[in-house]
Length: 527
Image 1 (spheres, rainbow, N blue to C red):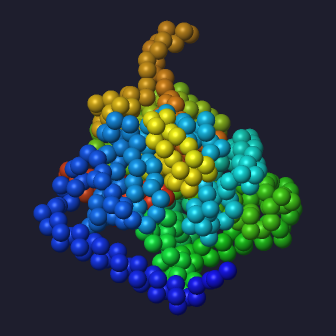
Image 2: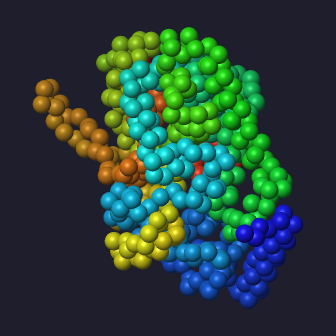
Image 3: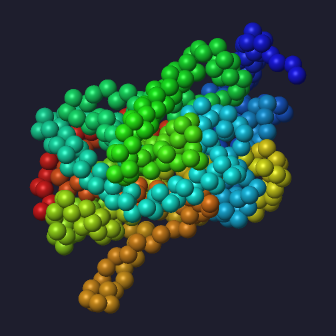
């Protein structure tokens, strides 16, 4: 079989870059009156061209502009499903239709998979973990992870870690920041806090990234860079370019390789430490790694793969959700007031003993309005913007859209949260009440609010079907713990201009462009 040399690959890459630049240049001079606003105000995609597909339609737009445009088209289209034609490749289907999501992610799950290309793109980072796996590899890890996440010892350990991290590190840090009127990047702080948590839960090791000096968060940065650069691989117009860069170890691929090395070396060190101290593992067996490190089904590489996937599930999703939550709460004062009122109420009926972990968890379960507000924030700004599958066979979607084997089919979670058909005309409003209903307590006769969950295929923030998120409950535990501790003591005040909305960056885990600078103002502590 003929294989291209590095020289030939580089020449091909340069040729493709030249051709693409030429096409975009010709498009710009042939349509001089077309502006970004005119293009992105269209409620449907223009007709694709042969070979280059929708390349001209997207020329000159940023990734965020293309994403917002597609989201708007999907949420307003009659079928909530569109077909995008990338240059030089197969069309991709994107949907915001609950029936189609159910078809792809649940009832016809066997017809759709992560696929070989997804593994090629994310495999350097996640290896053979659940995040990239299909078939028996995925099933085995899913079963084991399912047992671990429902294991009472691990649940209790998570509760203890979260409570300790908040009381001993996060709140003292915020108190100092409030007294000194410091501007803090809350997005960065939440990532640090989440990494300290997930590292303790996963490895029994706390790197101490939430301390007054805000030390260099080397592992947080390595993980964030690895995700961002892998995401860029997936959306590259010409994959051969990043493959050449990886082969030559240059540019962004060199940075990606180094970031992944830092993560894997850290986890390898944790594994070595546990194996050298087996008595600790046998006595405690509380953190995730200690429970799988001596499992004969996993070699060292697969154990590392699983740990990196564990970090993704426990770190970036919750920190991303909380970042947007605090911004929305600031913009909606009545929500802030209701949450503080609820915190005061549950604490009044609780023990107020911060070391009584079961009591703390019961208090958090009673925070119905806060739970609704978190769900509402993730509706508008989901941590995962799109989830993509590869068709393993030809198929026909419920609306009649034909799918060919090898096509990508994406659930556009962001668009679904902004669909008038799903949420009504008031969908732009941050309205926790849409998740609640009033009912009478048969015991006391009082009226109380209860949470009304949405079907996973209508609200796929935690995905749907066999791949639905295993750590959902733990995620809510962590998020409500932070909300309760922070908003009971502080007002979070963004340092941005009035009327300026942060930009949603739809990477593997979405983020707020440029960070989230805020100040913390002390308020009367909830007793």
